[in-house]
Image 1 (cartoon, rainbow, N blue to C red):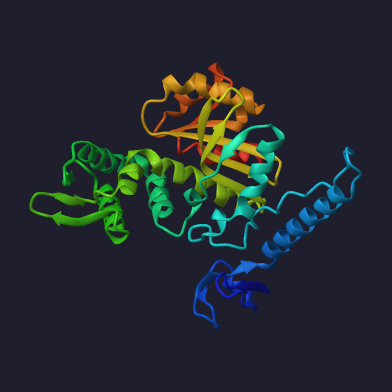
Image 2 (cartoon, rainbow, N blue to C red):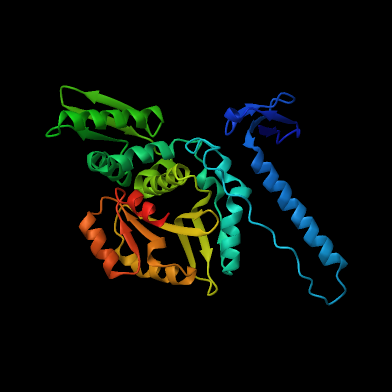
Length: 331
């Protein structure tokens, strides 16, 4: 059975397993709260128990002694099949991020976790997967939206001349998805002129998404879905800040920790990337990883180009098309 514990009044009750991941109203106070698997609460209780045990041992130790404290097991990774990956706030929890925090603590690296960066209750992940799954057809839409945003235009026109009927249908369906999820304010087809008008949303989150963050969401969701398919435990973070010992700062676009042991860093680039290669080599060395675990995911990078760059540097270069294949070679 799953468990429901109200964040407001602390009401506790069991729920059917099919409710896991759902947000329901508390029967006592009506406050909306998410239903979690029992394992989630067991992990939190064990954390508190071991923390209390360590504190008791420390307090009982003679002055000046250095007692051996019991090690605290890393918090269990997110159950692969217990949550709806594309619609959950579970990934934002401290418990979900704790294995990552512990991994970096062992390397004496200070990190800054943006927990909301992996909240999939919005629609960024769905739209990103649509883009990444059909980028050759949809990249013209992305380029036009991004170009219009940079010029502070309020709209852009997607022309259909020279495109196949299949591509026109795919683009039209994608633009309708953008409208349904409020990524654009309007999507108006014009059959006479054989084009489609998009009225843009000026919100900063939408601008950032089309300016490249879509690829981060695509990489994150590809990793999460593959982990679930392989029944692997995972912890994940996006926009993970690092502060190294020399006060040098970096931000990792996507960081995955598989089964608490296998780290994967994915840096996502939808534009120029060459000037950053040395930076990623530095990060790889400081984290103590081999080149297979540091992945540069470059949008629309030709496969032969990716192979050549991988051979030149101790890093892995892939396109959005090749990311899944590389993950299958890691676990």
